Each structure stands twice: as structure tokens, then as C-alpha cells.
Amino acid sequence: MNDRDLYLERRKLEEAKFQRVFAAIPKGKLDYKPHERSPSAAQIMWTVAASHAALCDLVEKGRADWEPAPPPGYDEIVSVFDRSWKQLGEKVARLDDAGWTRKSQIMMGGKVAGEQPVGDFLWGFLFDAVHHRGQLTTYIRPMGGKVPSIYGPSGDEGPR
Image (cartoon, rainbow, N blue to C red; front, side, top):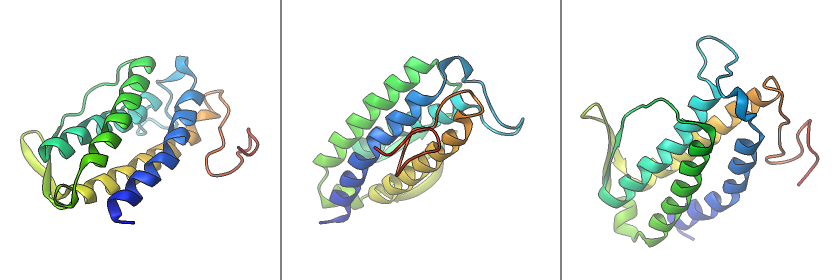
């Protein structure tokens, strides 16, 4: 198994976990944040969804333009996440070794914010998304929701 195949396998294992956490977020409380300097639940969800949309461009074009934007509503965030997650998996599955290792760029404000092989960006963003998913799980209970199981039982839900 090569690095790209491992990445695709890991994504398959993580997809339902993201969907469960997103579904557990109380829709009417997306503005919740535990501290004034913390991002809101909507901002975190949108970061995960929008970054996967940008990664589709990165895989296809070798470049992604990241422009932070205010989050849309819950349904649009989930729709963008689901669509981008699926599209990204399909695009990565079609990559050959040269595409996985080719240099790529993330642009912010018209400037290069990062440059590295496509595969390195993809792994880094997957780890970042898992991190943000963990952030969201700490928001769910104070928002009045129930934390779903992720890698094992949660305090609110038994094993899956």
C-alpha cells in the first residue's frame, strides 16, 4: 500500500465520524463559542467544509486560493462538506504518483501561504480537520447536544 492509498483508506474511516459530529451540532446554536476569542461552531464547521472544497482545486490545478469567508447556514455547510469530501476522494483516487508528489501551492490574499507536494497538503488538512472535529465535540454538550461516539463510546452514546 502506498501513501495515497493509505490516505484514501483513512478518509473512508473518518467520513462517518465527521457526519456524526456535524449532525450532533444543535442547528439553532451555531454561534456558540466557549470564549470570546474562540471561533464559533459555525466557523469551525465552515473551515472544515471550505478547506475540503479548496483541496479539490489543489488536486486538480496544483493551486488553491484560500479566502476566509463568513460561514453560511447549517444546511449549506453540511452540503458543501459532503459534496467536497466526495469530490476530493474521487480526485485523489485518480491521481498517479506524479500527481500525488507534484509541488502545489495554497494562496492567501494573492500570496503563496504554503508550497509542498499535493499529498503532504492533503495529509496536513486531514489532520487539521480531525483536530477541528475534536474542537466541535467540546462544544456539543454546552450547546445542549449529545456527543456522538467517534473512536469509541462517548459519555453520551455507547459504542458503535
